[in-house]
Image (cartoon, rainbow, N blue to C red; front, side):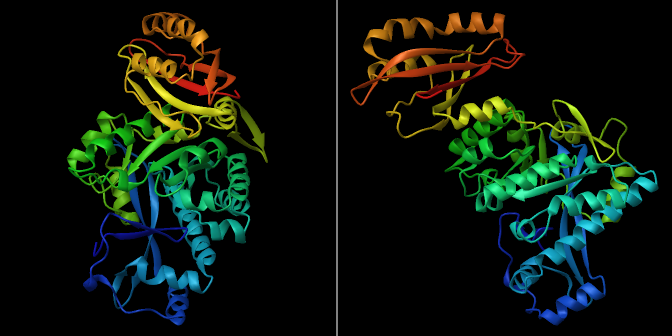
Length: 437
């Protein structure tokens, strides 16, 4: 490939970490050039595989747009996407990409090829201009495609732009059996707040998180680890974008990231090269892993004659808890006592500690726990007792104590949420602290 500056369908610019150099920038194009490109079928898409981090098996792909110009060759999307935006042609362009991807999937199925889900990008412009779910659903029906084979990626910034409208679109996509991924997670917006309000099926970790150096590596790895832990607690799949080196992939594996999309495994490929890869895969590499994860639902329903998985992959109970008065959300290792804060409300007095024992004593010293309840609280939060209780009962619980924040007596809830498989092999619990739970 001539450059590393890719654009996905949905008019989203996606860089691998460096800006294009001057010799990569071609002359500016006109509207006539764009129209001619449509007429001559010069636009196309490449496929970048999404891989199992441990085995390298291809479990999906993302469609990335290219302009195969007769004079300049493969043109950087940075040259023509801004023109499409200025001329209000983004949705026309995206419709072309969506249809092309569906045509490819239909052909693959008809030829008996190995299949993997392919994601297309949807922009806020598309959501405001058309009924995205209806259009994609019609394409699935028209080309007789299993809904699990087509996935949608919406950037975090688009979701933040108009959450109510995007939420409705995601709900309609789910009703048609189409999984939705939040792209560029953590790039610029209030991601944690959006996760409780938006019902996505997976998050794609922004590549900037993976681009670490000696100065930010320690903090960066802690952030990645916390995001991965949080995603698993919310039953979200997580895909790390932009991994280019063996060291980055090794770190992501160590932190528990199951899926990676990046140059370390594959650069974006032509459709023909992707077909060759899928045809000649090793016998021990299996597909559909990520699709099964993404489309995990609580019950089945039938709509328009199509059987699909409907309920959200996120726990509605967790959403409700996060939305009502949580002052702190943390992770606790019930064996080592390691304590990791994920989300914290400024109204809670400053209490920071990496050890659960120290943290609980700090809550008492800061009078977040009322002095009269301090003894009972410290007894209740004794790590050894919590471990024995939660490992055996595997039951989440909330306990209430008096609090004296800002010289005002109130009630504070101290909650422990545990997964069904909580044990020595999986010792992590979620700690919730709040005043109005």
